[in-house]
Image 1 (cartoon, rainbow, N blue to C red):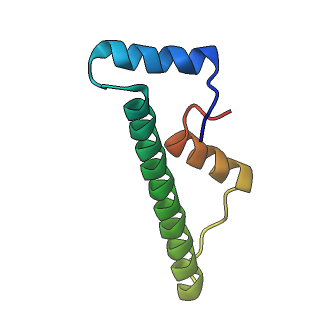
Image 2: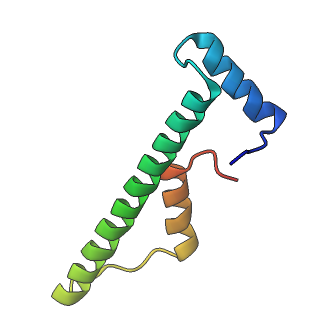
Length: 85
């Protein structure tokens, strides 16, 4: 597989290589993908916790007024993808 990077992305890779922390561009990309996957897993776990808590509250009859979906999504994006477009 081959990928194309924007000039900004390539600069990030070059900066990481220049730092000496990585031996190759492949190492930079591998590490970035590892962290992306970890963030995604944390996001999924957060959604599951929130849904479970909400379901338990509904079952117990102790539900609170719901926040609008756009507010919840904005909170999730800010927490798990702060630089998303």
